Structure formats: structure tokens, C-alpha cells
Length: 352
Image: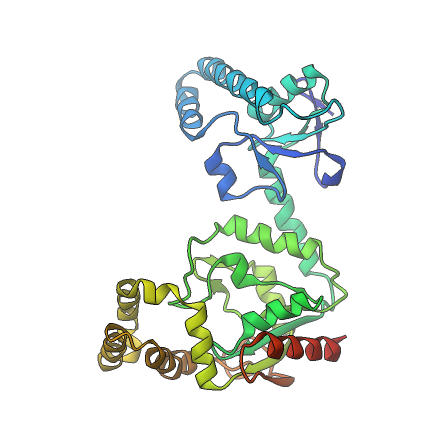
């Protein structure tokens, strides 16, 4: 199909047929979400995109002229730098937000050189619609063997999940994709946008064998600032649950290893704990804050496990839980690599 003088292609699409996927949107758009594997070569930066958009509201012709001037200069720079090593057989897929001026302008220049540059019809907007529909289709696959790791906070579920991956199992690490451990104190840095989170889930599922077991942790429908796609959330109650346990002292040691950012910034932790006063009481929170002030991190960690996390845990199969009752118990003595590897191999053997 020819559109605005360039060849366009439509979704669904085998991206392997292109040398490269070039997202020409502004960096702020790319950071929000992008097609997996795409590189960002913005033809307008964030400020220029805003400038052209403002002009467009009053004078479309002036906006196109200004946009063309900026785009031409930017693409010329790419030809001399980022794209200087591409050979004559290079055949990229170019896209912007809707497959309009930005992507077509770049594609025309690339095609004039001799490269078979094609434009994604509908741009990122079409990709986003396709992703949501295809994600729903994947999750509608009947009888996906989903295996859910349940258990108290600090019982080693995340490390066991990673050990399963190292042993060759398929996993869906939702907390890893969300960059959050799913609780008030679970922040480990900047989280992805909701769109980027969903793209990460899709990228894993589309490359997975949905007839084989997929392991994940039991989660609520929200992990920090992002939420599970509704089709995935509806699928989790069908999963087979494996309850993971670990002695309290080992759980406290493990949690200290994984939350080392808190001893480095105790003021932030103290502020977060104030949000627990309503449900845990002033006396308990004051005690925790005293332990932090005294650098008694092991006592604090054990206490917050016993008197907050364990009290909040909703056992799979219990009233109010979306998960089925556990089918077995995985008793980890500790979170050492050998213990995790052994448990992972046993779990894979029992579910194959």
C-alpha cells in the first residue's frame, strides 16, 4: 500500500522481516512505551514537538513547513552519525504516532537513498490497539498451565521464581516488570508506565509456549502504580498454587538483603511507616521507628514481618482470596542458591 508517497504495511506483522524498527517519535513518547526492539531516532525532540503542535493549532501550513525544516536537519544528522554504517540492503520499518508526517518524511528520505524503508500504517497507535487485542487473545487460550507461587512476604518466592527460570522453566516476573515488590515498602525505583508494563507482559507471553507451565508469584491486581491487565487478573484464579515457606529468621535475613536501600535512606522509610499508623497503631509504628533510629535492622525486619506483613497476608483459598487453595508446600530452609535450585528442580519435575 502506498500512502503519502511511501510504502506502508499493516498489523499483524512479522517484524523479523525488517532490518530494524525505527521509532521517530519524541523521546518522551518513546519512554512511555514502544514496540519491543525498536530504537528511538526522534525527528522532533520533546520541545520541537510541542512547538510544532502549538503552531498547528493556528496555522497548519506554517506547522508543516516548520516541522519539515526541523525533520530534514535531524535526519541529515542521523545519516552522518547513527545510520552511517547501514549497508545498501538495509530495510527498516519506520513509525511515529499515527504513521503520518514524521514517519513518512523520514521514510521518503531513506527511500531516496535506495533503502527499502516502509512505514507502519497507523503508527504506534495501531500497535497499541493490536497489542491489547492480541494480549486478550493469548490469555483466552484455554487450559494455560499457570502455576502460582504463594507465601508470606520474605519467603523467597521471587528468588525461587528466578531459580525456576535458570533451571529452564517459563516465568512471568510481574514484580520485575513493574519494578516494584507490591507493598507499601516495595518501591525499588521508578516504575514503568502502565502501557510499558503491559508491553513487557505481552513480550513474554508472545514468546512463551502456552501449552507448557508458566510460573508467577501471587499478586494483587495492583503492583505499586501499575495494575494487571484485566484479562490476566481474570486468569490467575485458574492457576495451581504452590505455597512457599521459610523460617522467620531466614525470612528476615533475606528481606534485609533485598531491601538494602532502606538502611541507606532511613528517613524515607520512617516517613513511609507513618502511613501504617491507622492499621497498626501509633505504639507499633513508634517502636519500629525507634528500632530504625537505633540501627537495629534485624529486629525491625523481623518485627514488621510478624506484626504487619504476616497479618496482612491472605492465604490462597481463604475467604476473599482470588487464588485456589495450595496443592502442595515448598519448604525452603533458607534463600541460598543451592536450596533454591533444588526446590526449583523438584517443582519443575512435579509439574511436567
